[in-house]
Structure formats: C-alpha cells, structure tokens
Length: 363
Image (tube, rainbow, N blue to C red; front, side, top):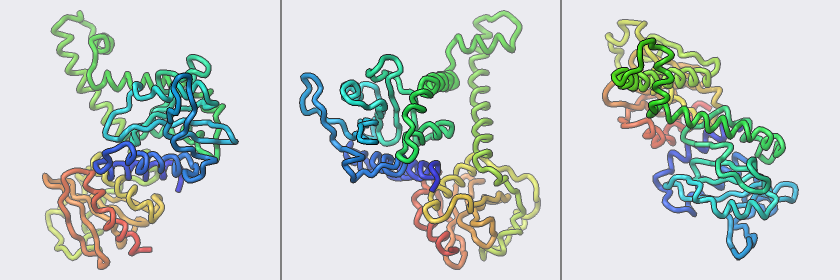
C-alpha cells in the first residue's frame, strides 16, 4: 500500500474503534503502535528500533519514563509521549518530553492521543523543545499537504535535516491555517472590519458591523464548502462524477422492479458532498482487499453506486442518501441488494465485513 493509503486505513481504524478505547494503554496498543509500525515503518518488536518505556534520568527526576523512543542509525531520533484517546492533546501533557528532549540526541518529539499527532523540534532554542508544534496531523481530518513532510520521518527515507529545515515554514503555515480556521468559525471584530472595508464603501458603523458579522460567517461557510468539494473531486483524480440513468444498472444488479419515476429524467442528478464522503469511506474499508484505483463511483437519480473496476456487474455498495432515512445497499453472492438503514456516515464502518465480502466475491 502507498503511504497515503496506509494513513487512510489507520484513520478508518481509529474512527471505527474510538468508542472502545478508554485508557492510555489501550490507545498505545490500538492506535500508536500501528502508527509507528505502518506509517513510520519501524519494527515495534525490535528494541534496536523502538524502545518502549524509555528511561533517562533527568536531574532530580529519577526513573521517569517516556512511552517510546525511536532509534535510527544507533541514535535516539524521535521521542513519543502518549495520552488516552478520549482526551485532548495539550502542551501541559508534554512535561516529560521537554525534559527528555534536552538530555537525548532526539530532534523530534511527538505528543499524541492516537488521533492527533503534534510534532515538535527545537527551532526557538537549541536542544530545547519548542512550545508549539511545527506539524499537526489529525487523523480525523488529514491534511494531504503535510504527507510529504511526514513521510520524511519514516524509516525508509528518514531525512531529519530536510524536515528540520522545513519545520520553520511548516510551523508558521500551520499556525496561520489554524488562525484562519478560528476566524472562519467565529470571526473577531477586526477580521469582520478587514473584510467589510474591502467590499463596503460606506462608513463602518455599529449597524454595519452587526450586519456584516453575519454575512462574513455565511460567506466563510460557503467558501469552505466550495473548497471541500473541489478538494474531494481532485482527490478522486480522473474518476469524474459520472451521472447515469438508473436503467443502465438496475436490471443487471438487482431484482427490484424499475420504478418509472426513477427513469423519467436523465438530468437533475446532483452528487453531494455526503455521497463523496461515503464513497471515500467505502474505499478505505475495502482497500485491504483491492487497490483503491479499482474502486469507481457512479451517481444515479435514486442512489450513488460504488463499483469494482467501473463494472456495472460488480457492485460493491449503493448509497441511498437522497431521502430522510439514509440506507446503504449491500450485495450478497447473487448480487441481490439488501438495504440497511444508517443514521450517519460512521455507521458504514459497521458493515465493513459485508463490503469486503462483496469485493472478495469478484476476485
């Protein structure tokens, strides 16, 4: 699997198992060790590569332990401190990282709860860990632009100098993006005034401020939605959102009668962001059995189809999202569809076995 695919698969696992993970030890076993192994590429069972419960006496602190130390070329390169996944990641949790960073050769420190990974180095002062991370990886919302830098920390292409050199730019770009995100969620007065004066030529009165505060919020949400749609479309590469007539698929993959109203119009089909997200979830689930490049989507008037090899006779799933009650359509060995009600996109993960079974039936 490619680096991005492995990361996507781990993110899917985190979402699927999140509710069952309640302790720090469970977080390490279920999430952090797979991250070290499948993403960074180190052998978690080889003490020459990964040292659990690493101890280095620091001043008057004797016997204090850090969760993991990663060794490369005989030197400790990365320190990892873990917290339980049900809690947020805060810099207050990094006291041991600060102390160990100063007495080891490590230039990279990671603070994580298994879902969010904060990467630190010593940009502000030599051998002293910065208080702000230079890179933040959130498995619930993966920023693809960070993947090349993250991959530099993996065992096969470990390039510490390169990532340290890029850390300063990454740090400030990350902070700027988080600041912009905060302004989009809840714009401050200065931000509202800055944007208002770019589009409104009248005096900036209290009434204008109140009016444009609401407009800035709406414009921000619409802008983010537009960007998300564009990003998802680009992520699918050459797989365009094919809009087809239901008659092209229904008779071949299900015994359900063709509803005349479904075939009345070939146009008016709109692929929604929710359908695209559902498609991506299905791809993440079945990537353990088939390359994502073999998964295709086709949007119809009454459902969104996920197909293997772009073949109508190889349906993996259907997403019935154009109604109040959402359904996922699952297929048995006879290609008979069974519709199962779901309340949210996360419920798709509950049918992972059935989706994988459909794919295996075509291999």
